[in-house]
Length: 79
Image (cartoon, rainbow, N blue to C red; front, side, top):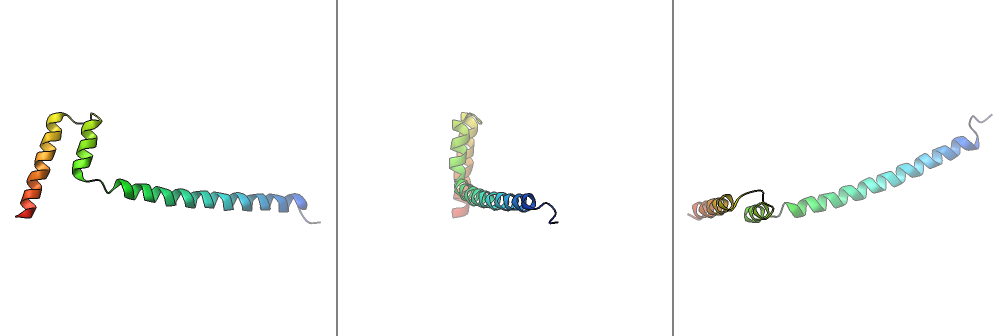
């Protein structure tokens, strides 16, 4: 006969639509994750240090040292 008959073609239709929906979800997730990554890369070193200090990752002395070093580096490049 025709092998699996109606069940065989029905299964392939389900597989097809699951693949189409899966690819659409994958495409949309990759599209939006690239936008969020590019937004996070725009932060300046000073903003990163400020966020680290605010979260408690670094101490006040370390924060001030980072700011001093950044200011010193900017003065060197301006010369």
